[in-house]
Length: 267
Image (tube, helix red, strand yellow):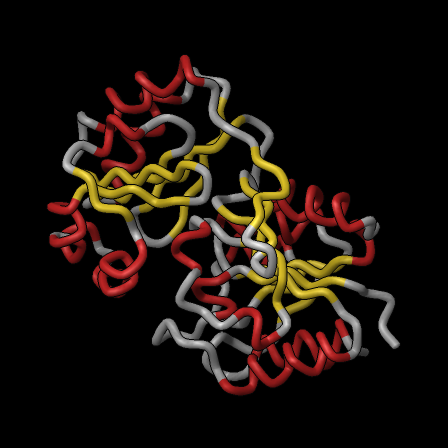
């Protein structure tokens, strides 16, 4: 039996295939692992509210490190186990900087995602068309999202160049920044990432980080891949994730998650 007790999966590009669906092999492998007493978790940049459409309970997935490690959540109990927030004094600066670019501002507060209705209707412009049905079904639509910019914000720019300009405007603040998708710019409290989210979850559950597997494919997964006892990159990963990982498995369209579970978590 493998020494690993827990496996945490990024969602997009990892746990979900390119159609944003859970492969049958993934669901079956998760159920086998859960029945064997292994702990399964999601480690994602998504807010809790964006995960409500997925049957995690049926697969034995109980926990989530959500919103890039800022919210540790128990799906079974519907309970926030821990959270970290951006200092309030930085929020007006973030809101002002976001108003200077052509972008969709997404604010995440206590696991709930807030977006302006007009931006959701225009998501193809922000290179996020594949997520439009998800946002229409799970986000809270508001008229002025900057009024909700209290604790955490994601920004989806129209271009990568705009994302870089926003980062330059905010570089003086004691916050952490990372990239996701084609134009996404994620802002978290300093020292908080998907990696610290995994560490926090393991601490809550009393599991040594050395006995945890982290699985991902993108820039914002790199801290998780480095901090986990075993960092696993999907076959479709970008170069940064491949370099950070200890091992590489099949891609998200060819049963990579089942490979992680059967080869490394179950042993």
